[in-house]
Length: 326
Image 1 (spheres, helix red, strand yellow):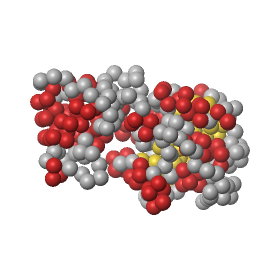
Image 2 (tube, one colour):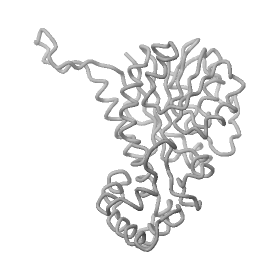
Image 3 (cartoon, one colour):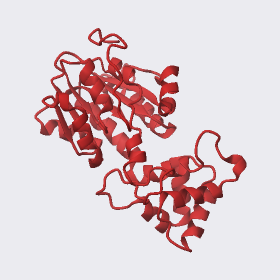
């Protein structure tokens, strides 16, 4: 259901953010369908792009809680949202702690939650953490600087078999063995220190006739390393469980993913949580212990429109799913 409280399309202009244009903004605003005086959580606030639009389109919001594990983006988000500073509170916490974070503010339930699982252009181009194969930066890739292991550690210390496993599991890379073997061979000569070095090794590992036409040959390997270092998939599953416990009845959880591994987790968890008692109807007392925790608002993925993809190519791979508390 699209809220009647939303302003007409085109009533507000797209914010001019140099580093990051949030994807599927119109769809996020529509599917959240916030009530008057809502409390909403942007659990991956980043540079504040989605939050800015939500605040503009729902001026009656009483509180917006922003969460992000990357400390570097928080001051930028606060600046972007400064016009609504009295309504906004941003904390440097992983979204797996959403329930505890909300409860610590004296709030039991919220009226909407958004999670954008993509890596921002700022993180790729300006963080200096080696996320991009187009920049010559030290191989870090930790969203949270407090994490123990960096990409440098994995690339230079993991056994070849372990690297191959990570590339297959988290990157779905069919040349995982070739790439892992090349990494091991290269690091015997000298440590692999930068994103340029690693990208070159990966590119040379894959026969040129198999190089993707639209993406860099290192894309899947960089994705796999980032997911492994930041424990992204396990954290996503934990987040969904905790977020659902934080939703008011009818409040919506909107999740935007960018690759099949993430989308599969969101899809399967929404299906699992939208599962009432599975006992036979003639059984007088429930024995399975299952109960419905959400209702799936979208049974299939919501994708960006063609115009958005043309204007913002990053949106091409985005997929949205929505569930609401019961």
